[in-house]
Image (cartoon, rainbow, N blue to C red; front, side, top):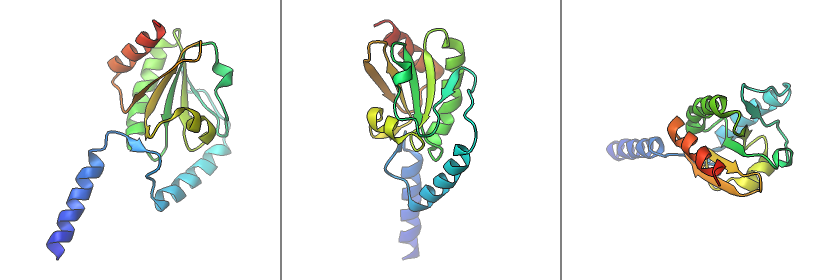
Length: 157
């Protein structure tokens, strides 16, 4: 019996490691409690810009302030491993392309109304919104080259 349990545990671990992106609906109750505590602490701090990326303040309901400009949004969460790995790449590209677009980081747990409007099933999700309001999405971690090409292709439209 122990052999079957160990085999099942190993299979479950491999399945979790091989996921390319996080699903917003797959948080376990323990993760929910940890995330809530971290978010509560974060909400008491004054939001600050992180270089070329605007950190969307908790409770933001929409992206209306950014209409009319090319806007690139990184939808992420604190508990999402792939999101945390992708963050530095997003910030690096934002530094290089700050003259071409507005870059925003949106924590889906802190800004649920924005996430509900834009996010599909998985994060990290990078969404490019054209000045006329068209939306283009890429899901999962992108390399700097992939993200740059994505932004260039949307900017050319």
